Length: 118
Image 1 (spheres, rainbow, N blue to C red):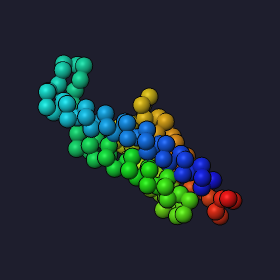
Image 2: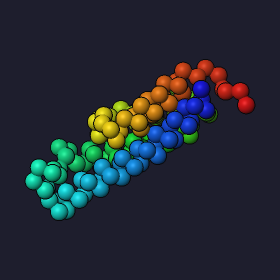
Image 3: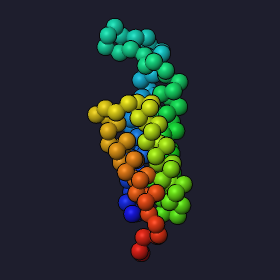
C-alpha cells in the first residue's frame, strides 16, 4: 500500500503542478491585462489561489515521496494537499484527478500498517 501511495501522490502532485501553473498564471494575467467581459473574470481571492497553486502540488509530491518511510506524515501531507486543491480550485474537470488521486494516496498511506514486501 505504501508503494501505491507513493505513486498516487507523485502523479497527483505532477497533475497538480499543471493545474497550479495555469491557476497562478490566470490570476496574474487578469491582474495585468484586466477582465474580459463575461469571458474572463478575476477569482474571488487571487492570493489564496496563488498560495494553493504553489503549496498543494509540493505537499502532494513530498507526501508521496515520504509514504514509504514515514507513512503517517506522508499520508497527512497528501490529505492536506487534497483539501487545499479542493478549497483553492474547487472540484471540476481539471482538478478531479489530482484531488482523487491525492486523497486515495493519503488514505492508503495512513492505512498501511507495516512496510510493503520488497
